[in-house]
Figure 1 (cartoon, helix red, strand yellow):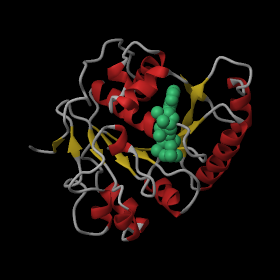
Figure 2 (spheres, protein in one colour):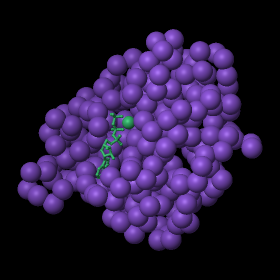
Figure 3 (cartoon, helix red, strand yellow):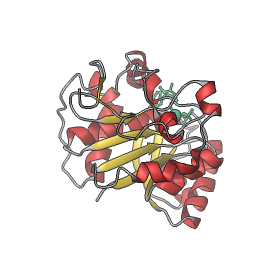
Figure 4 (cartoon, helix red, strand yellow):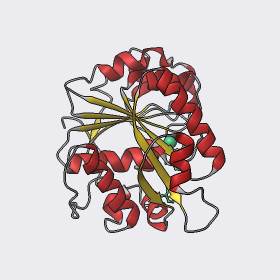
Amino acid sequence: MTRFIGIISGKGGVGKTTTSINLGAALTYFGKNTVVIDANLTTPNIGIHLGVPIVPINLNHVLQGKNTMNEAMYEHPCGTKIIPASISLYDLKKTNPDNLKKHIRSLDNKSDIVLVDCAAGLGREALMALDAVDELLIVTNPELPAITDALKTIKLAEEMKKDIIGVILTKTKENNLDVSINNVQAILEKPVISSIPDSKAVREALTLKDAVVFTHPKSEPAVNYKKLASNLIGKNYEEEMPRGFFSKLFSKKGQ
Ligand SMILES: Nc1ncnc2c1ncn2[C@@H]1O[C@H](COP(=O)(O)OP(=O)(O)OP(=O)(O)O)[C@@H](O)[C@H]1O
Ligand SMILES: [Mg+2]
């Protein structure tokens, strides 16, 4: 049975896409057949983060009824599959997210884990993505505005009977301005299961259009993303990952 996990926040720009990409890469390394879907239709970023901003068939085409999820799936030679969304305003205007759940769930039993990179906020697009998954990882920065928005998302997710795995604190800094992990847990009433420091390595990985788990495998963000992935699937963390996973050119699935 496939696990459908949403990566969601509330506030924008906190690190959902970075988390989706690195978790997807790490899960694949740990042997899980993983698909990462860009369900942030308004401001899709997965293709941009990975250096493939434009692909011939994308999630918008699927939602428009022109193509299947399989046709919109791109695979790196190592195995992680990505379903990007269109960066075109023209495509966005023609795309209705109402059938997102049907299409996402069409991947059931075809992969081990489907990660859904959700839109910020709690608009229709984010709600459709929330509805499509069973489990959630809440991403927030250790700052009150982001935590407050995350709390709203958690409350809504609970109303929708979603299983919240935990909170991922991202862009943490070594200063006394951050809300402490204990206080984040107290406010959100959920465990913080991973803490990813604000790091030059992550910014460099973005410049390299690659996952930090490959560009800087020993960096703290990379190690923590790998630990998170291994925890999610109940495996022991392994230090070494093969290099070059996302850095090679994407190939169309099956080619
Ligand atoms: N740990 C980190 N250290 C440094 N920069 C980071 C870190 N995590 C994310 N970033 C940077 O923060 C910016 C926003 O990250 P990202 O795109 O992952 O956020 P998002 O939540 O997906 O945003 P949106 O809500 O717009 O979809 C990017 O430039 C990314 O490289
Ligand atoms: Mg994003």
